[in-house]
Length: 427
Image (cartoon, rainbow, N blue to C red; front, top):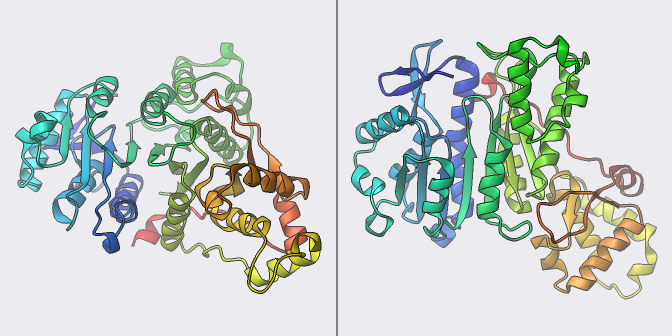
């Protein structure tokens, strides 16, 4: 795809989709940093980093309205330059295209003159800005930032068309060196409906798996979808004449399953820029608190009700259902089986869990006992085992809630599905 520019801004069509995404990123970066840095109570002292893997120019020119807005890299720089207590925040901007990179530096000089371009491009040892500019390919850039002391890090994948799964794997292998290690989150932008509706010079996927019936444009789209998934198994599920809405859901679920190789939790945040158009910002994390906070952040924007099932009612039903574990429980004490189950219900995205989840460790520090409790919950029907093809040789038994049993025994329904964010929500 040939890049177009208006002055220093990269040109993109589509007011509603582009502006909607930029607005959300502009709100999300400060929100994410405010939590992961420790917040005001800890003087934001924890090391944090935002890594833009497709930084572009920092500005976006929306051709439909002839309007220039900040892109995601611009919002990261705005946070860094104009927010108090961001000394320990690093902003790392990776852009391989020479023209984009040159315009990014011009935007920075114009908008954020306090950030030294010379230091941002120079050796890390003499960089006092904590902003790093890298005009390199991804692998070289990742190698260079390896020793920067990133702390809690958010990697944003925001390509013009799609993210190749090999790119996701490259970053994950560099950063997630231990199974489901916390401290790293991925944010991936996905043009969901474009795969079925097409866009500009991008053909929609064919409605048949028979390659002889594909046009040359459709062959190119299929090839790009192979890159998106990193394999070809998706074809049997998406190359058919089923309704587009149904295939969009299948695409998201299949993509989530690929990301589960590295992450416990995958939360797709839906956007509905205009009729029939659907995009997703997908947050990947191994830390239940971060996922839950992001879901709450999003529900405030869309008007989704915050998930708050009744603890007293559910607890009483649990006590009646399992009197045998209450024989030595007195007063306000609660059995650990209940405490863990309630955390999984209320705080774990899709009710996914394993014995190494941080909040479960807080309830029961002993690893053997934690596993026994999870197995007891499985035996009683609250949990079901998952078959997850992890990226690690170390196999960790994972579970998810059996919502049917949770509803029948405790009277608790799952959270409502997220309503897509629309332009009206922003206005």
